Image (tube, rainbow, N blue to C red; front, side, top):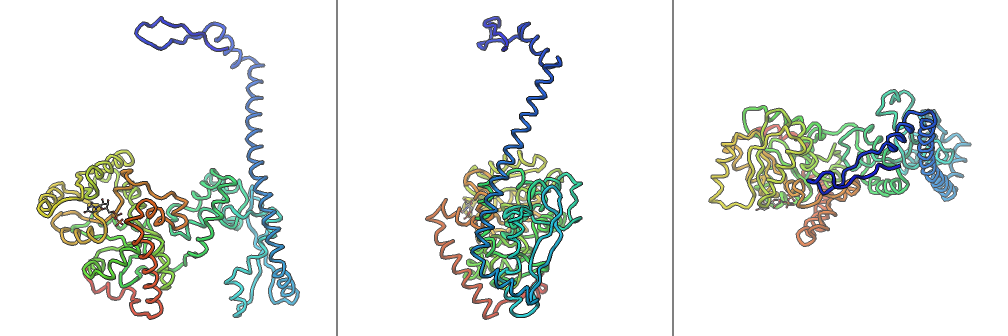
Length: 485
Ligand code: UDP
């Protein structure tokens, strides 16, 4: 029964005023406190719980059927290979290895793989992932799935921790969000977080998306355990750090006595530096240069100098804001169209209220106005200066005026203000996971970007390959030590 509506008692209000009738109150008391009412409530809860279980089962059932069909088709298609492996097994040239793993609901199972000999043909087979072929049996048996969190050894990740427990709600798999993000160099969080995100948002379509995103990720390859701290790509020295290390570096620099310049370098910047000697010189003299984008990851791979993570300004910015909050450090925002820096200031106020923004200035100023702007920055006593004038202008501007501004750290951040002001939407995460952020930017501004991306990316890769084979400019670190920081 619904409460009756008494209209017009409040003459100031145009809305009807609701007041529960005695019948309504009686019904409510009965529903909440009588034995029958409570039983009915319990039943309703059961039905709700059961329908949730049914939905989950239906979803995992669909996934299971798809896994089985795909594994079966895989085994049929690869049956000639299976025959060969049977012969190799029988002649003891290879062996079937069983690795204990923790599966769904923490049940242990054996993950199968071939042990290959350490010979040329063994290494060749390993390169084409032949040793992973028996995993199809695990999928067929239901131990594993194509998409799911990485299978781990017993004791590696304790389900006692609440965050970890979630990952054991589903079957482990061959590929998952973390697997893709590691290969796209955007593995900023932790594996547990990524697994939790997968379990919470799991769907059949989502799995299909992950499987598709895994295709380019195979090309990008996995990172290596030991990556050099400094790599050189097309003569540009790059500080090979993770996102967390970059934040730590910046926070430490903010406590220092004099100004520092930080640059972000992507494939386009490397192309500009190739023809612009002044810019190249600035990059070589900068205090820190971070690797931005999938192009640099590929270049590092081609040159045998693995890039640890994609440290771009846009992903770094919110993390830096969090680190800056309540430290008392202040920020000045310079660049982009009029009104944009102010919108970024509003974004910061919402996202990290503890960050002090002490000034904003658009980036379309004349030479005559420059002195006054530098004065304003100096008078604001900002610790950090973000300059969004586009490369190479922003880096040249910082190089020229860093010491006049009095800031401790100045970085060129390109289109960052446009993203955080909401003027230009950023590529969705799934596109970034595929290393296709550049394609998204091209779609937004095809006239301006077509040359930068379609010609520029090809030219960049060509130059890197040339460098790889001529070995002309691969120098790691030695010259940097001679440069003053
Ligand atoms: N910009 C500016 N003043 C200028 C030219 C550009 O403030 O004279 C701004 C522009 O509005 C944009 C940013 O600089 O916000 C450059 O964006 P772009 O995407 O070209 O930079 P990238 O990230 O590619 O270096």
